[in-house]
Amino acid sequence: MTGKAKPKKHTAKEIAAKVDAATTNRGGGKAGLADRSGLEKGGHAKYECPHCKTTAPDVKSMQIHHDAKHPKIPFEESNLVNRHANMAVGDSSKPRPGVRGSYKK
Image (cartoon, rainbow, N blue to C red; front, side):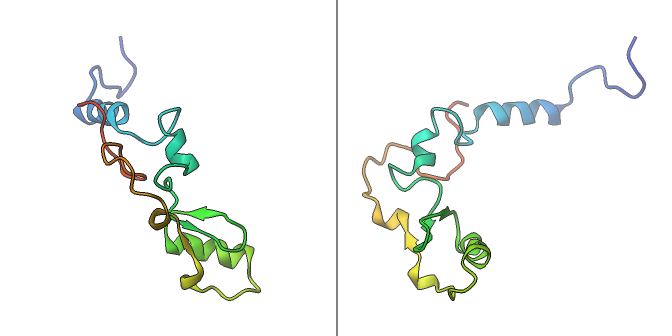
C-alpha cells in the first residue's frame, strides 16, 4: 500500500536526472582537485584580482567582488589577470577547465 499521490514507479525525468548526475563531471572530489586549484590550465576561475589575488570565473563576478572588497579603488577591467592566457597550453587530451563533460556514457 502506497501513500497518497506517490508514484509507484520512477519517472523518466527522475531517471534522466540520476544518469546526468552520475555521468557529468562537476569538478568535485579528487578528480577535480587539480582543476579547482588552478595549477594546470588555470582551473575554473579565469580572472584574478590584482589587489588580493582572489579568483572569479567571469568579469561580472570579478566586478561584484571588486565593488564589495575594494570600494575605494576604481574598477578597471584591463588590470585583471587572465589566468587561462598565462598558463601553458600543455596536453590537449586532458579536459579543459570549467567545461562540463561526461567521462562515461
